[in-house]
Amino acid sequence: MVVKRPQVAVAVLVPVLVMFGIGLWGIDRGGMWRDEAVTFQVARRSLPQIWQLLHSVDAVHGLYYLLMHPVLALHPGEVALRLPSLCAAAATAGLVAALGARLARPRVGLWAGLLYAVTPMAGHFAQEGRSYALVAAGVAASTLLLARAATTDADGNGDGVGDGDLEDAPVGRLARHARVVGWCAYGGVVAVTVLLHEFAVLILLAHAATLALARMPRRVWRDWACAAGAVLLVLLPLALVSSGQAEQVAWLRPPGGGTVERLLRSFTGPTQLVLGPYLLLIALALRHPFTPPARRGELSVPTVALPLLLLPPAALIAVSRHWPLYDDRYVLYALAGAPLLAAAGAERLVLAARRVGLARREADGLMRGGLGGAPDPAPGAGAGPGAGPGPDSGPGPELGLVRGVRVPYAATLAGVLAITLAFVSQLPVLREDRDPARRPDNLAVVSAAAAQRMSPGDPVLFLPSLGRRSALAYPKGFHGTRDIALAEPAPVSGTLYGRETGPDELRHRLAGLDRVWVVAEPYALKSAWYPSDPTERVKLTVVGEEFVQRAEFVRKGSILRLYVRRAPTM
Image (cartoon, rainbow, N blue to C red; front, side, top):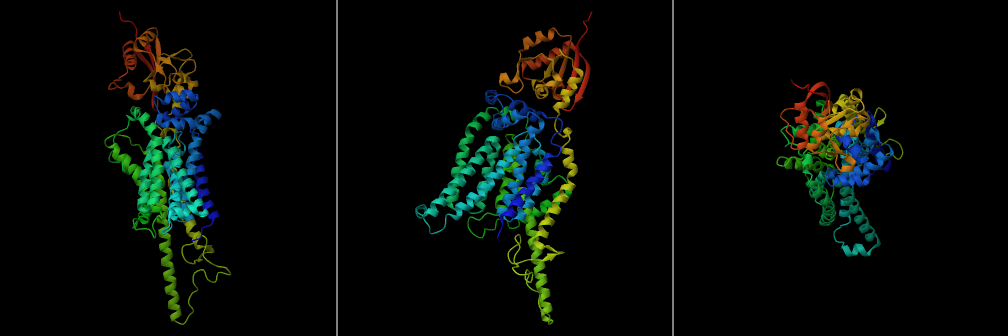
């Protein structure tokens, strides 16, 4: 099949634009939630302050904060915070399309890229001011580079030609240079990706499975192993530092019985109308998936997409049974495998329908010929001078018409229409996801409530200290108030939420107050919560024993309470 570059360009560009448009829709939700607020306040610190912070917390996100630093320096706002994720999601849709076009044909790439773009999970993280969309883009780019490097390497390893013969010839030297450049590019992209989030290292497991399924020659394995080894060496310092910050993921729990189903629906689509056909197309793509390729070292959509879809989530879920590390967002990058397989299944369906149609036309032609009529011309014949296979047609000449539209393009447009219907059916999910209430909290609402009810000079107590994130993300709402427990601000102290005073000093400060505002996490006001930090225990003890609640304002994720000192008993 001859593939023209304009076809590939269109197949890549259309999903990029669609993903960008979907991600741009409602990107300014009017509030950040807690994780985005961390990005916002850390990335706006000076580079030495960011570096100081990473020694104690959030090392796993260090490169992302450094990348966001110049972005937020230009324009510190919520749209700028999410714009890199939006661009990364659009790039991922284009890279998925490029993979489909390379491994199959342009229309498979177009379908795969569009499927990725309309998946609600992709749209969700396109509007998230965190690193996960960038990691997905890095994984998609590295997978495309793997496909290029592996096939180039395999083609350069022809039987009967020694390495010395290749190196002596100019063409051989150019091929060797291209091979080295290809693997260096692959290793570099994977290295940057795992530095954005270390759990992306599981992509190496998927890529190794791809090489095994494709029966790649020894040279490819050697070059890939060198690149993978370099990636692991780059990752090692980060892994050592982040292992000492394991308390950051202490909130994670072992995956339950519904984890796999929830991830499946996130990857394919939460609505039943989309889920059923999606799984059917994937099953079609995987019919005899492990049949050896036509020749050694040939990649196909199943050999690339299936390991990408299954192995990283499966490995992380398996590890998390004993050491909880799993969350859906940590394997967002595996989503790219699902639309590739579904598009490959749709291609198989189209080709099967075409073969049935050709067989039926041939049978009709033979029957008419047997009755004395002239047989029908071969498909594509009689279409005028120079008629031949369409640029998007399958093997063999085919220029059948359906109401004046070329059949190959009719099939492509039918696939696009089906994806459009899937998008329309999921519009309520996408619209709901743009509601700030869909996030765990909305710090802008907390800050606005504080601005309405607190006066300049009012003392404020954050319970626990991480409740200070609303004041760090939206300081205007707390302008003029006094943070009673704060000893050293967050940027100066090299912490996320600041360093608080000791318990004795806090008791002394609270002793001179007649009233105090408490901004608390909901769990901190429950009787079962017993903090290990002595300062947090003093907050609970003093407020509970010496103050009485006068007013309460509940916002999602936070509770604002006004306490006044108890009247002295006679």
